[in-house]
Image 1 (cartoon, rainbow, N blue to C red):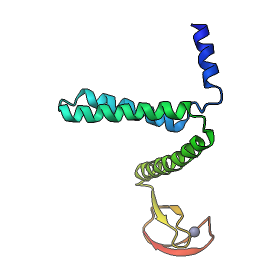
Image 2: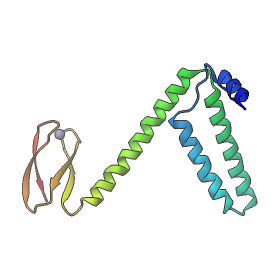
Image 3: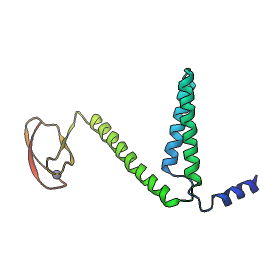
Image 4: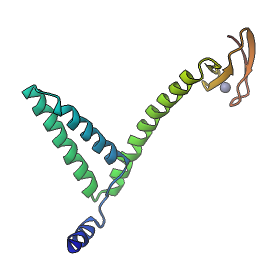
Length: 138
Ligand SMILES: [Zn+2]
């Protein structure tokens, strides 16, 4: 067993290994696998099997790839999209949680998200990012 691990470590030398994108592919694989258990349509099962096979192939290809720069670039592109989606949901979750106390408005100059207290009336807001002032009604 130990020799096998040593051989594997030797094999992995100079190869890319694992990253966030591969973890995401693995999670997608598990989700499709779980969905596939409840799919009884023959054609749909075949399609899902093929997608799963493709995901495994992609994961193995990326892990064993010796073109480390290309894989790093892929991972960076993935993280950029993933983090944008994640922060979108985090912000909306926060907006919903604080909906009674705060209102979120966009700065008309720099488009920054600003959080203002929910107090009825006309207010002058000063954007902390671009320092410009504008009027808003709550
Ligand atoms: Zn601003």
